[in-house]
Amino acid sequence: MTEKRVYNFSAGPSTLPVPVLEKVAAQMLNYKDSGMSVMEMSHRSSSYLEIFNETKALLKKVLNIPDNYKILFIQGGATQQFSTIPLNLMKNGKADYIVTGAFSKKSAQEAKKFGDIHIAYNGADNGFKHIPTQEELDLREDASYVHLCSNNTIFGTEWKYVPDTKGVPVVADMSSNILSKPINVADYGMIYAGAQKNMGIAGLGVVIVREDLIKDHKENIPVLMEYNTIADNDSMYNTPPTFSIYVLGLMLEWIDSLGGLEVMQKRNEEKAKLLYDYLDQSDFYHVHSDKDNRSFMNVTFTCPNKDLDAKFVKESIAAGMSNLKGHRSVGGIRASIYNAMPLDGVQTLLDFMKKFEEENK
Ligand SMILES: *Cc1c(COP(=O)(O)O)cnc(C)c1O
Image (tube, rainbow, N blue to C red):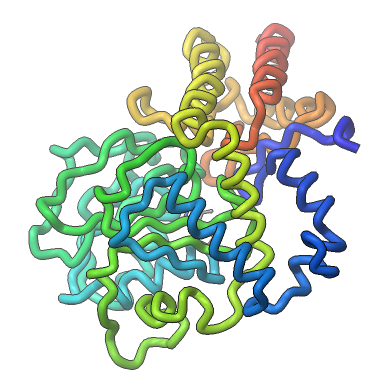
């Protein structure tokens, strides 16, 4: 079965490690002698609570999450958090947003419904090729929080530092690079991610939030958007996305068994370097992002013209690769090389890129 699999460079939902898929398959009909699939279990059953608690504990271990942070599992993906964050965290009606791509732009637009939003940096004018330096940020000292997107999935840029916000909590959308490298969770007030890029499958949003920031909530917000209610009920105020949480647990087991986030970082750097080193010496391909801000997760580049971009995508499919077409707002090619993309997949892409350049330059 596995020999028919393609190298899937999709930005999300995206490729999963084969050992994870095999475990899901093996446990599908009868999970650990429970006589049923995880999909069929009550979320309050002892079998399921064990999965739930182990997944939370493993996330805490792998990301090294301090004790004063809550881990919340929420349906609605990353986008729901665009609304939930201002509703819960914008205590004084003011927040700063750093706009470095399509998702941070959307999150800022959504927050504008709820208060005074200041754009601390806007990368739209230069085609979102750049991540601002500390000096380029125009931050307010009285903002409730500063929001940023740590990896811009569509444009292929990634933050390489955490900005100094003079004590204002940083809220980070890490949907496309969470678990790709070690981070210092304490640098952030809140971290959130949709699971379907680098930590599992769709249907689950993960929130990691400092508990003092969610002690209370405003009146009249929808109950499923109250972080403290979700925290007080350990993400079970209603039915959580049970199967997606189970797959997250398997992903974390896989990462842990390979040596954790230091090992992920080494693997990811090695894969990204293979592609960027080749792209840099080529006059045929052009990398979209600025050199200092390149994403190790989403590698975006173009061929000399749009016809060649289309030909590249078409021929790459015949060569056993899928989903290399860039997002419509950038065009060109995007290779998403999350944790689960093996080195062999990147090597296959690299060999194809070389051959394609030879044949078409
Ligand atoms: C994919 C993505 C989102 C949207 O995630 P959903 O789970 O579909 O809501 C938000 N932010 C970033 C950085 C993403 O890559």
